[in-house]
Length: 274
Image 1 (tube, one colour):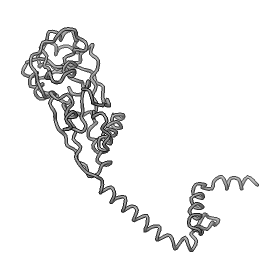
Image 2 (image 1 turned 90 degrees about the vertical axis):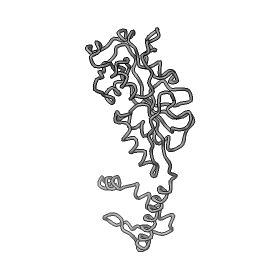
Image 3 (image 1 turned 90 degrees about the horizontal axis):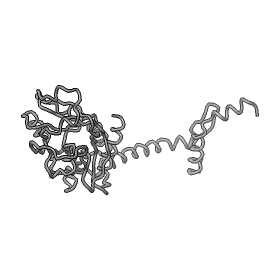
Image 4 (image 1 turned 45 degrees about the horizontal axis):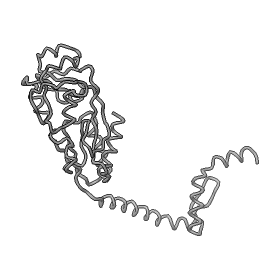
């Protein structure tokens, strides 16, 4: 065989030819006729074409009907602080595309429930700062430096970076004791050996920043939340010597419901691009 014959055979779309042959074997008659320019329909193939088109259209209608019949409900997302960081909006868009008919409910949960509603089932998933209570699975979405929020005019506001040692004698704004390890983390107990001075206990971000503005104490804040909760009368400064804070999406151990899995997977994909 000459070179021209080899090239002609190598350039032929083998995949399409295999499909044609398999279809014709299944039907028991020829659908396509090979001509110099490619393939054309045989008389039997031409008779079959409108039926095939109708079947394809009905299949598409059936798929749409099946999607519309998908079970619908409400995914409840618990939060203890604002999320931001370019995460939530895109994840919700992907969730709605994958789960048509489902609604989403956002609920703010106080720090006195460290599971953010997961423990009692009032939330399906939750945005939580680590550490989390037992029985909760997490996927970390962001790791951020911890800083301190102080009243405007505070001597520490003059520094570009605050050594953690400079905060030891400052009154701290604390989460409630029910927050457990999370309270300790935001008091800096992971690096300090003594008990902090607690000026006031708060249960929501709004209470925290009202307390800072009022001069009742200072508070450790993640870098991202410092931007989200910017307030007049409050100054944020990074703190040296502290491990970072980690924001995660959380769900109950063993919860494999599709709405939970789809939302968590959407956030995983979004977080890799942020």
